[in-house]
Amino acid sequence: MATPPRLDADAIRAILRRVIDPEVGVNIVDLGLIYRIEVGDDDIRIEMTMTSPACPMADMILDDIDAALDATIPPEVQLHVDLVWDPPWTPERMAPEARAHFGWKKP
Image 1: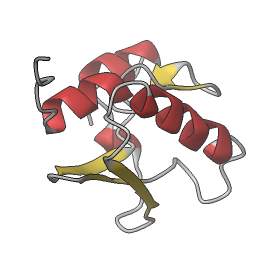
Image 2: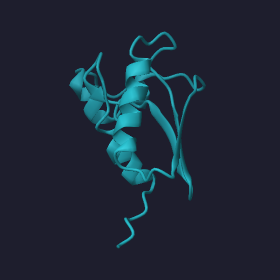
Image 3: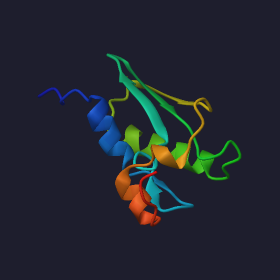
């Protein structure tokens, strides 16, 4: 049986692009919510934020991340998603495509 290719940060980022913030209709990567992705031999660590500490969709987004990655990563690989608030999210973290979705120009 062939060994599946090893996932790297770019592959994880591509999977996370399938996770949409339901309030704004933009994926969490382009929205600028993903701060760091580290892929180890037996774990994946994601550091992310929300647009606000009071985000009502945080639990749904975290569940969607689990669902997207659980379908891809081997069962022996542990997934750790850490919510951080420093640095705080600002619209400047958004990808140009996401900014264009809202009709915003570059700062």
